[in-house]
Image (cartoon, rainbow, N blue to C red):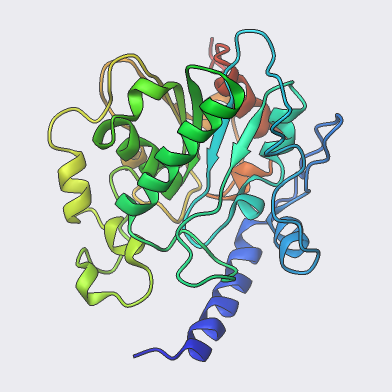
Length: 290
């Protein structure tokens, strides 16, 4: 059994690896009222040292969306938080007069730096409750979802298994683990002490088998999936796509040839952020060949 101290040391080590992997040489410079963080490291330090719980512009309950735009709910990934994942995307969306909301979910213990480790089905239930809260507080009938990595899987699970489609108009999945990832070690939650979400993201997990019984997508929701060919976390990369009618599956590199962004670095690259904002707004995007 891993002691609490050793677990925290493990998390600290993991954090150092993630920080190195997720920084980008093309920092977000989108301007506006709300300030974007330059990279994952900056967001991490702002929360852990500076005490900033949420990115600038997120969870403003007095916000009123731009015309014909529903509130946006962001869902972070494994070993992350709303601050770490969306330190640039949150402000970028808010600067487009969108009302943006997020919560941290799935912490093993209160105060853990890295969240998103709890069972995916339980985390999806938490997101379901939050979406209803956002709708109530904003007075809107629908919300737009954006999920990164495990957040993408949670979005698909919520929409299908928890009847979320009646509450959502559009879903933008960024590098989603919707078909699992080859780096997951076991599909058996009983063999995992800490990260049950990691077991759930094994390609043969019971949760994924349940999700993939029948079509994954639901009528009435506009689905877009944005993926980087440089991803080393959710692999094989092509398994991030959902090949069902009506799903817009996009490689970043087909829109931005030669672009090198990582699994989490895509959330802090200026050009990629601009693409994500368009998808969230429901605007068309074109490949370089079009």
